[in-house]
Length: 227
Image (cartoon, rainbow, N blue to C red; front, side, top):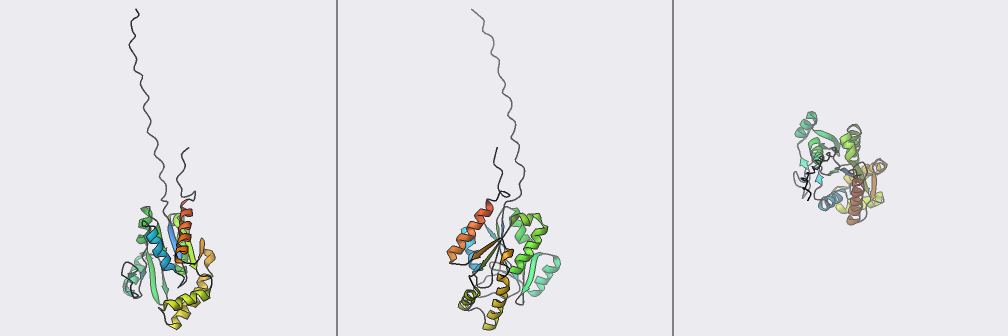
């Protein structure tokens, strides 16, 4: 009878820890929505925020007085002219401008902090403000990688005039001034990534959501597939 040979324990090679994936830049989007007065920009922004609860809305600073129903630090940061100027000199704004006699500005921290935390940021600005953001993005890769610009307008200036009259928020002289500015703003639509011709509220929302979904799937923003 043969003696049994002692069994040799087979040592399994230690599994090597899988290399950690290289750090990727944040895929968060900076979505800039611009439109002439009366085109439905504020309505669209509010619907987007309801549809995308994790989206962060940047609140604009302004020196104008609150309109009926507007709340401080919810609709706008309402500042005095002196406070606004102090922040300008301190370099707190990523962009600021004077529109219809009032100052408006976007605080750098309100825009960059949520982006760096991986949250989409929604920015509601006029055409002048959007141009400033584009110029900043051209110099800063962090902004350029995140930026998506959408221009919302009606089919014609006549439709826009009808909406402004229906809103009834401005005197006739002010409304005519807004329409003159609107003609210039609409002429800038080619400077934006996307043009949305306003229809119903739900149509505008559907189109904006489609834009956001498509931008999320860009290869430059998507994680690399495993091979």
